[in-house]
Length: 240
Image 1 (tube, rainbow, N blue to C red):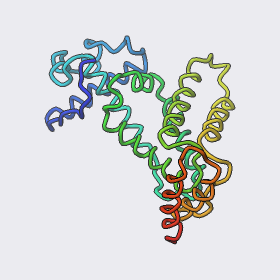
Image 2: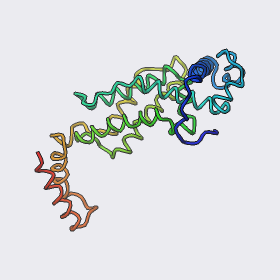
Image 3: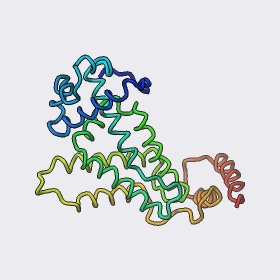
Image 4: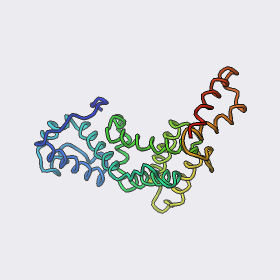
């Protein structure tokens, strides 16, 4: 791939319409004929432009595919429903996972391209989506639901959703059962969350009390470190 891991340059208003038409034409070819169908000539014909326009707007075919992947991430991001204060954090986690999997199953060729491009993590829409996921995980952690650390939770959620999509797509249609997706989702929920919240009251005070209660059972800290941490947690525990 030729593009560096930076945000794409702004597109001038005069180029926006043909650029979008070319990207949409490339997506149509991708979804109907796979990646091999996305040739410069075929895209130009489908978009009603001359091939030099593609090189002028995207640099080369790799640049075009990166733009297609970015469009995919932006489309997925637009479908996300973000509740900053969901009534049920576990159901919110399930709903987010289901949405990601549904997008992949609805747009299989585009989804595969999105996550096969080395520059995927450079996408602004991808990074925004990751921040939404991290916000969801942070709420789980603050509520005492999180079983693992936040970075590992994000990796597990991402890996299981992508694995579910790719596994489903690899199966013959007659072997595709919704029970598989449900089982994978529930395995993800079990891996990253507790059955009951470890902290009964949300906020730092409840979390501090829970951690302070668990300190005598751990051996990773020295006596002096435990004393200092207990002092800090004691202060936080009274901030109701």
